[in-house]
Length: 473
Ligand SMILES: *[C@@H]1O[C@H](CO)[C@@H](O)[C@H](O)[C@H]1NC(C)=O
Image 1 (cartoon, rainbow, N blue to C red):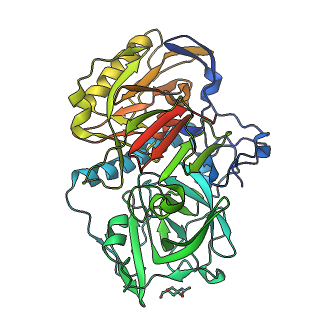
Image 2: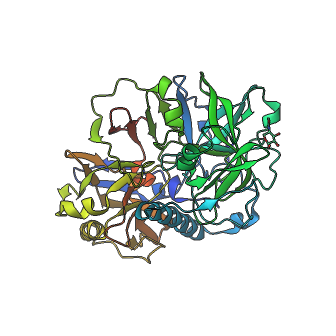
Image 3: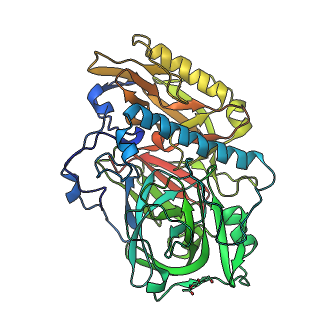
């Protein structure tokens, strides 16, 4: 795959997720990081890595890989790092707005799909995760790169003939008529009703007796197409009759992926459909830089003793989301004095698709205050999109940053990797990678930037989420 083999580094995709902050030395409460590590490096050796260890393990890569070849869009190529990070952060906010409006509304958006034809708009908003994995579809199987997303349920891929629109993807577009195992779900099927509706938040439609799904992510990201079933392959594991969307009209910022793998909690999610085999357990380790590879594993394996668990919570107004109980934050080894009600008001979800962790305003203010104090010797820089605490590191070769930890009930502390503390647009604009919610009652989101290099275990059957030192770099 293109994201693995490389020898040259394209300068245009120096995105938030690409930084490999390696720390040179540690102190109990601080990390010393080199400024060079704030900017991505492309290693040419990584193409030789083979990281599939077991049948149910797949590799994870960044969707935006600065080391892969340029995208076809020449406008992307001319954007500065600063503009690209600004864009990524703006897109992150669109996703967060969508999640928060879902949770604050009692009723679902009535996006009614009548046919596989929804107006084509130029999508700008992001509704996707930032990490991709390979999944095989069909018989014979085609390996497709999918964005994986714990914040949504429905799995879909772009399908020929792309009756309305398909965006540019890396793999050949899947053709169901070349697969012996593809079948359309009919409109009269039991699945083509409330079940599909709850997985997509949209009323299913019907076209020539085939069930039609529609799913919308941010303002203008969507996929519409036929609801089908197919044999899918994950490593050595084969799942016949997997229900998914065969997209005929797809738009939005899904990178060059072929579609999306929905890892939410709904009965149609990948996790639920493979529950008989994997027991509703999956885990991932998100790589800290685009030159390394993470893993997404399904099924339980003995947990290393260092893994600490917190209860996985549910809420009827957000049945797809993985809620957990964030109860505190530490900076530089000291727990901040934040009242528990600050976190309890809006609750917190963990999401693989949101980049920057969102905190209740009062919690963010406490974090920012302590961080600024620890960083007092560095000159401030200009704010960047949703990030208001930035530094100008011009002239420094290393900087000392405080350790940040998140506390979850019943009191476990999960450290944020040094690469999850800062986002760099340029040496003169390096920002604290956390943001405040607009409203105290908005849901908090534990974003992927702060989850890098951790093993995150979703044990859905036992309603617990575990965190351990990561098995990836
Ligand atoms: C699925 O249904 C659509 C719409 O009715 C049709 O165009 C397509 O050929 C069907 N595909 C298969 C494999 O039956």
